[in-house]
Image (cartoon, rainbow, N blue to C red; front, top):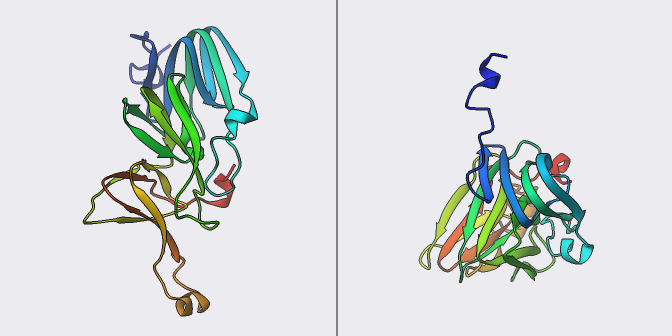
Length: 223
């Protein structure tokens, strides 16, 4: 069989070490040697001796979607083998979390992660009951976290001298040491006249980074 489809660029190569790696821009390969966790329904292929078990809602409820507030269902993958994960052809990225790090992320952007990572639900401080991202999941410990994002994300540094304002529908995550609050960028009078469509943003202050996707959430992408 010949053709560009069967070229080295697309052909899966033998695994080098356990753990996750970027297979291509749209998928992550995880070489399982024990246990890992992934978004339910995100497995697109596997080989070897693997078991996929639905994770209870007690854990799935920890990952809340920023807009709908729904839990993100998870599954545990156990055994020996390789699995490939993807979601709606979104771009994939790997975050390496080291001891002492904390990264807060929207559940809709989680694809898979090492079982060695700890995660817990936290309320986004200052968000009140409005705007997206009221509940996010904070990852800590040591391990790798696979994320998905529509398009190529923007990673914006935040400094004490220069806070950053982000659309609550576009934010992917941020380093958890940042202080968050809601900010209005237009007056009540302007909002009553129709406004600009950018009435409320999430304000991040302190020192760290915020990750933003280059599009707002659209209704057909909420689930």
